[in-house]
Amino acid sequence: MAAHLLSKTGKASGSADIGEALAEQAIKPHLIHEAVTAEMAWRRAGTHSTKTRSDVRGGGKKPWRQKGTGRARAGSSRSPIWTGGGITFGPHPRSYGGKVNRKAHQQAFRGALKAHVERGTIAVMEPTGWDAPSTKRAGDYLAAAPAELAARPLLVVVTESASIEALSFRNMRDVRVLEARDIETVDIMAGRSVLVERDVWDRWNGAAAPSQDGDDA
Image 1: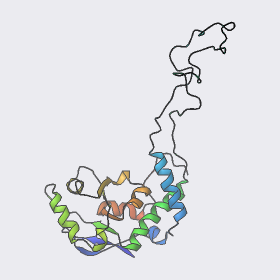
Image 2 (image 1 turned 30 degrees about the vertical axis):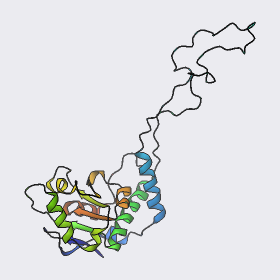
Image 3 (image 1 turned 90 degrees about the vertical axis):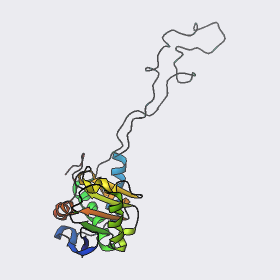
Image 4 (image 1 turned 180 degrees about the vertical axis):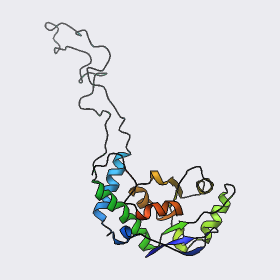
């Protein structure tokens, strides 16, 4: 079991072996689902907010006297039942992120990678040696790649977002370019095919998964 290894022109030049940890990893859909759900929740901004009656400006004066008007008693014009008043049980800034056990997250990430390896939809990109960014050259590169890499959307994983390869691929339709440090399980699952720089593949091959903020052992 191995991933496609692509030459400077994009043609398959061999196979990139996978490490022992990845080879022995079972694909566990329930763990992948758990990791993807948590990662999508972590990405929610959670910045929506409303004001309670104590936050709304004004309303300090009693609208009318307690008795004798024939109207219901009222203590403030900022009561939730008044127009312009506060909101009861409204949303406030919060984090939607849950907790995923570190080992479970690692298994989910490896499982997502292995699924691509088994389908043949992941390839390793050797250094291209390109001297300047070129979307046309990137298009020719993918045209020469194995047929499995034609599935879209394509995820291109690079070391630096400012590299020549990243700048070449990023303007292509249905191609998403991300730095390796930003990759999560949800990104691997969202791509129908994956192209990984050789340096990144070598780091991932023996690693459990990219580090995640908020993960606990």
